[in-house]
Image (cartoon, rainbow, N blue to C red):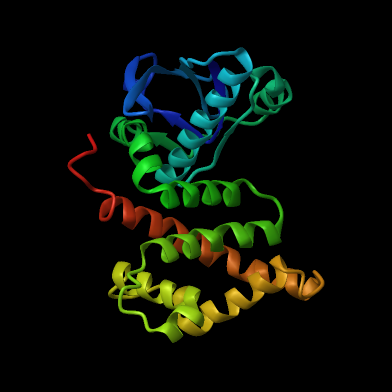
Amino acid sequence: MNVTVYGSVKPCPVLIRRTQRSLKANSGGRDYFSDITLHDARNAGGMRVEFSVTATSPQGALRAGNVYLSQLCDLLTVVTRSPVWFYMPDDDSAEERIRSHRRSASVDRIMTEDEWSWITGNLVYLRRKHPRFLAASSWYRKGLLGRDVIDDFCCFWRVSERIAYSYADKSGWSDDDKQRSQVRKCVSQLRDDLFPENAPSILADETVSKIVKLRNDISHGNVPITLDIIDTASEFISPLEAVAYEILARLRDTELVTEDVA
């Protein structure tokens, strides 16, 4: 499969047209590998990604390739803090190619060799051992790509919420703790673990309570979406994006470091 990935990210020159063998999946105790090659997309940003997919039908190959590339893009976005996107089948990207050629050349980020090696080398490991991290990476990319205030607010908050709930140590919780304010307590634990000094103000208990209430009101339809709701959600977006990125980055450097990952 040969797919164009769009965005303001380009691979460093040493990665272009260099094929590497990457672990793509693990099923039934068997590892599946793919040769993967990056090419210059010859537009304002982005790249072409060439990789192999094995399936019992063309439709199955398309679905499998879509999932694989989507997760690669999630990790690429988390590592570079720059959103990337693609279309599959690639024929659907004709209009995007036209828009890209019309834009002035702008590359915000050059992906390094080490970053690409981490992405391709850890995808299967994260899928097996840290699916919440991978899911949070997907929410983060959705938030960066979004154009709707309410959706972006929910996406960025889900990063912190889901990571906190997954990684918090609940072994010492009382029955009352398990019944009340689980999200706030989980976020509080994660905040103290990852930010022992100078914790972001957006993670303060009172602020988290306000965010949780707003998220519940929006998600459960407790309130109509008014201009006041949109303005309130909009004020939270920038600090929520910043703390979501920082949480994912700090977890990469601490919790996800293992001898099992090359």
